[in-house]
Every structure is written in structure tokens, then in C-alpha cells.
Image (cartoon, rainbow, N blue to C red; front, side, top):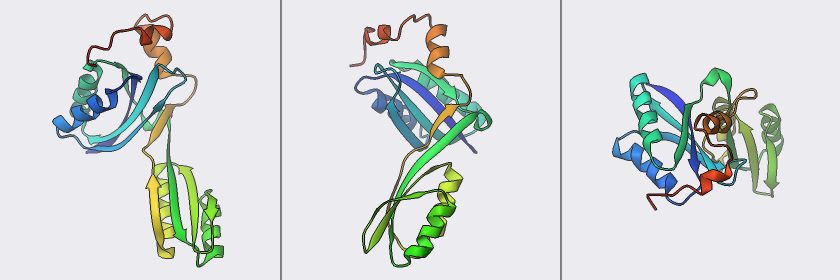
Length: 184
């Protein structure tokens, strides 16, 4: 199986995240990563979902997600034409501060909080870069960590919302908020 990143543009209304996530659980597909946030339009939210499936199943999943009420667009985000990033915050024992600071510099991370006992490090990067940083920090004693889900944007001027809204004949983004929400 292989990992695929899917971008889902949805109406910003209550219950949409639950409906999308329950679709995956009902069909026994595991979500490796899920990130949801606002877009440039307050009426829309964007989900970035990473799943581990094969080609035909991916097509089925995308079609099923698209059928959900409140879903405006679904698009696979190919690795070669997309910028992918994750955020990591990690607390490390500050016993060997100089060595830890050298690792932080090598991985282009930054220290965002420190005291005599722990340092909190922030890193925004591709998944493999984050994994390598964590591996380098492990011998120093990781006290706590939190990692965001993957987020992704297409390279260049392409925008999911522009393609989708114009293809659906929606002239203004304001019209989305006036559509009826039939499941709430």
C-alpha cells in the first residue's frame, strides 16, 4: 500500500469533520494524518487527509467523500507538485544544552521555550525531516511531543478553491454560506 494525501474543501459548518471522519471509520480505512483549518474564505474549511490505500480504493474513497453534503471539492495532492509540511513541538531534557542546540541548528528548528530542566523545540518541515530530528533528539530524553497532521498546497498559482468554485458555476464565495445545510 502507499500513502496518499487528499485535500478536501468543505463548508465551514458544524458536523462536517465528524461526517468525513465517520465515512473512513465505517469503511475501515485508517487515517494516518488529518489536519483541518480555515481558508482564505471564512465560509470554507480545508481538510488535509493522509491515507494508506491502493489506487482503486483511493478512487472509491475520494468519490464517497465528494458525495457528502457540505463537501465542495476533493483532490489528490501529488507529491511532486505539492509542498507538504508538518509542525513538531518537542520538550527535551536540557542536560546537554550545547549538543541539543547543535542538533536544532542542523535541522533548521528553533528553541521556543527553555528553563534549567527542559527545552521546547519547534520544527516545521517535511515528514522525513521531522522523523530525523526526533531520532537525533531521542538520546537526550524526549519528555513530551506533539506533532500536527500534514498540510499541503499545490505549487504555483493553482488553487483548489478557484478551480472548484468556477467549475461549479459559483460566482462569489459568499453564495456558499447561503446554501442549505441539509444534515444539520
